[in-house]
Image (tube, rainbow, N blue to C red; front, side, top):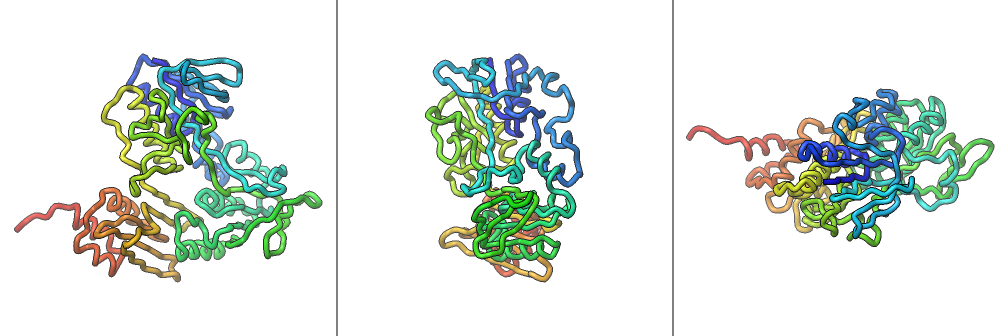
Length: 416
């Protein structure tokens, strides 16, 4: 059997390793378009902080890891897929055939269509090549603008702050991390960052970027322009699904079933590029987080190898973020459901906040700031669809009693 995996991120690497375990004799080829060994994008901020070298971002540190597993690793771009011939064409002119194909092509950063976004001093923070540019252009005392205060932006924010730059964050929404924080928690996160010396401009749009005497000039709507050394764009990502155009069913990503199969029975998709079942809604969504990519990669590989019981039950929306020492988290339907109940507890002086969302007597979503002890419990209650009974009313009165609620519903009682 010939298996080809396109994409060398966590989904692709885990899939290749899982296939090898299940099919010792299979022909496995792993293809990535970057010159480096497979690495984790989520480790790049730690490299920017100086906590790890470039090699610390590698997903597998042993130099001959893939060779020892008899997995062929190619550094090439894939130009196209011929589904009828079950082949792919590479940018070096070679063609490879497959029995099963996995698309784990990930996602790429998007940029707003503004004048000046193509200037040399405007970079993303997505690849090791980007990291090298940031290390060269964002040193202590340099003026830097970070466009975007979403999940990725906030991870980059901490790395930049630790580099000692004069940092200004520009976010068009009215709060930080708007896709995982509500108004109160997102506002508290902004206050926290400002208390640490970071300027945060919410409800602010960038009009354009120009150059003036060796500096970049960031023009803002309703505010004075900013003259900086570097602009880092972190305004969102988009699934890399060009190879699927006209070939597979797509929406925001490549649509997959519970076996991670696409609309072609011998082509699978996993990770950021796959639009699979959403645990909370029952619909389909792209879950662009590393835990989902790892889960997808393993399940896809098992099914490619002929497994029958590896079904994807749906990914739960889960985000945990450490921003300059303040932990924020959101799970499931954190914005609530129609007709549902909610309970919140707010202590802004201590940067503590929790908001629970209920449907009937089940916890379906949660949003928390500064609470680290019971993050796993929140996820467990949501994912297990635990019936809380009387504990729902207790949590409505005091949302911090989530551990008690979990134990009451999951630990068997003894005695009469």
